[in-house]
Length: 160
Image (cartoon, rainbow, N blue to C red; front, side, top):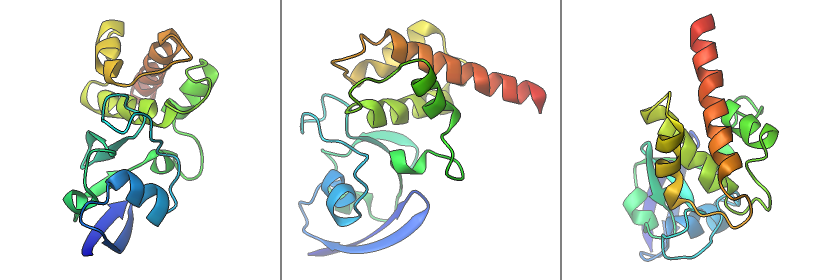
């Protein structure tokens, strides 16, 4: 067992985990944050995407010990004061989800994109989101949701 210190969604945790325990399992089983989903288990589908120090990470590939001392954001940490974020609202309003399995990873990938590129083009969104697979939506609604959230961010900046 190895002791790890994680900051997850702004809350500090100290856990003893097996050295080979994946961050995904640590989040889902040890911390009971079940929003992060396992899809393929090989880092190819994006369902388990979380942000580690602001970077998109496939949590099914990262040993929890490699997240020691780092800031992890899961889908549970995206809302603001218990209210859905602009990105989450856009996914709901624009139909950017159907079954919901990929949605947490899609939203975290989109958040990383908008933090890096606040005003992306449709092509930039499509390229960025290519690592997050969806079997239900056909992607058009996901791209539309990300662009809508970006537009809401621009409007908020203009009001400020």
